[in-house]
Image (cartoon, rainbow, N blue to C red; front, top):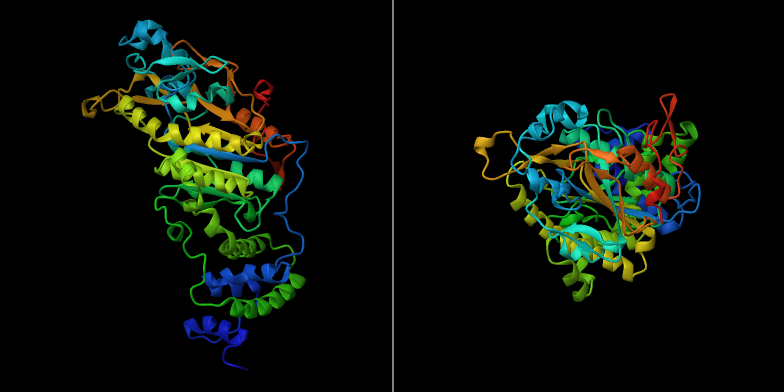
Length: 491
C-alpha cells in the first residue's frame, strides 16, 4: 500500500499509543482520532451527500403555523439591570426617598412573595432613580436618559414591565431565563428553536452564543434534545477572526488527503450503521464535525466585520458590544437561527448609578444600530430581538456589606423587572404590564418566564404545548407544564 494512502494516514493516528490495534466500532474509531476528525464534513461538501444518515435533521422545516419571526437575537444582560433606572419610571420613589420600606408600607417584605422578599432583598431604604425619564416616539413611551439613541426607536419596542421569576440567585435565575428551568438541566431556548426550525445555512452553526469570556455551556446546551441543536460558543474578546474561530482550519492536511480519509470513513460509517442504527449521540458528533468543516468555507467571511463598509462599523461603534452586535446581524442574515449575545456586568450591588451609566453607554449605540441596520435591510420584520437579564433590581439601597461599599447599590429583585422585544412580530410602541408604585413587584398583567417563552415560540410559529420531545418516558417542552401566550404583545 502506498505510504500516503488514506489507511496509512489513519493508522498513524491509531499508533500514537504504540498499540497497533484496529478499532472495532465507529465510536472507538472516533474516540481515538479526536480532533483529527474535523475533516469528516468534507464528504458532504465534495460529493453533495452526507456521511451521516441521508435524512438531514438540520434542514429548514415549516413550523406549526405561519411565523412572524424566522430567527432570534437574544441580548442577555447578565447580572440583572435596574428596571427602575431604565424602562420602568417610579416617581413615587422621589416622595419616599431615603425612608425604610417597612415604614412606608407596614410589613411590606412579609406580604411580598418569597421569590421577591427572600434573603432580605426588599429591606432597607427606598432609593429613587438618579436618572430622568421622558416620553419618546409616537407611542409616548417613557425611557430613561441612559438610552438616548435606543429611545429613538421607541415605536419599535415592545416593553414588558411585569416580568417575574422564581429565584433571586444568579445562576438558577439565568438558567430559568435561558432554559426555563433553574434546578435541573434542560435544553436551552436556542436549542428548542433549532429543533423546531432547523437551519437555513449548513455552513454555519444554527445556534451561536457570543460572549467575551465564554458563557456557561448550560445556557446553550441541548441536554436530551439531539446534540445538533446545541449552541456553539464563540469568544469575541479578540476581534481577530483567527482567534474567534481557532482550530477550524486544518494546518497540515490537504483537501485531497482529507477526501481520501473520508472515503474510508464513509465506508466504515455505513457498515456501523447497518449493524447499530439510531445512535443519536454519535450521529450528532459526526454532524458537528461536518459543520466544523463547512465553517472553513463560510465562517471566515461571517466573522470578519472588517468586510463591512466603514459607515456601518461606525454606526455600531468600535467597542466590544458594538462588534458583538454587528456580528449578530451578520450571522442573522446568513441564516443562523438563534444568536445569543452576552453583555456582562449588570450586578450592581455597589455603585449602581455609576455602573449603569457605563453599561448603558456601552449598549445604547450598538443596540440602536442593530435595530436600524435590521430595519434598513428589511430584516427586522422577521428577526425577533430580545433584551433583558435574569431579574431586576430592588427599589431600595443594598444593605449587604454596606460598610464596604463605595456608593449606593441595588440588590437582586425577582419579583418585578423589565425585558423588551423588537421586530419579529412583537407589537412595537407597546408597554405591557406594570410593577407596583415602587417597582418591587409585578402586579398588572404579571408575566413569568414560561409566559415569555410561550410568546417567543408563538412568534416563531409554534404552539408551545405541541413543540415537545419524548425523553425518559414523558413529553418535555420548553415551558414545562405552564406558560401562556401574551396576545397583547403580538402585532
